[in-house]
Length: 106
Picture 1 (cartoon, one colour):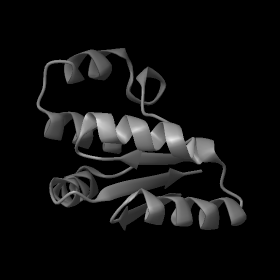
Picture 2 (spheres, rainbow, N blue to C red):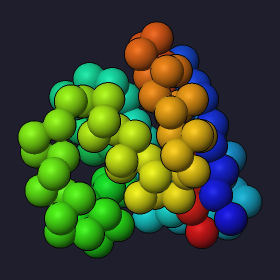
Picture 3 (cartoon, one colour):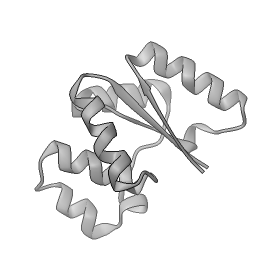
């Protein structure tokens, strides 16, 4: 099961994460995405959530993302975290507006 949540900022993300962990999800089940790479890293570190890496994407997709636009990279990572291509495209549009996307995958 995959859940997608859109939040405005890190404070709301923390609140959602607290609710999700109360429901039995672990921090390893939760991915946070932001359009700005540094912001995403800072929030992921601060809230102790998972990052999409080679394990989720595979070697070739991870390497391909080094040479693509940020939008393409984000959509690819969100798909690797469990979203459909359509859901990833919709979520990426939310990221363009400065929002955060949480993906929860059990």
